[in-house]
Image (cartoon, rainbow, N blue to C red; front, top):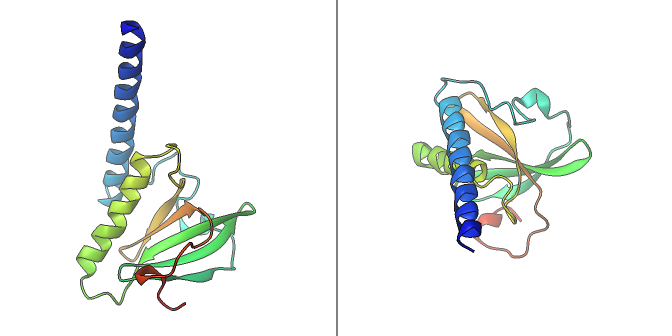
Length: 142
């Protein structure tokens, strides 16, 4: 039993170390000190071939669009350019990106496909996680 617990703890520590290394890579990319992570299939706007983007809505921080990549529905997110506190809004968007990268492959966490920076604005692509299940502050323009 002890060996099994030690093995599980060792595996968890290795997974956390790998997740932190991925987050460090994303932080370096965001700072302009590295290219986008190699494991991201989407690393620039050119990687999103679809011309059909549907605006799903937005809130106080982000605009959210739906499109398809390789026939699968995805969500593209970016910060609002009209928000009053641009630094905080950009930090919120970057925080979600780091969260998704850290929790990559965990059950229930939408898959981060990647992102790009355009005019100091972060755009990132996430697995479509299903339909809206409620209306509220984050569903402006609906």
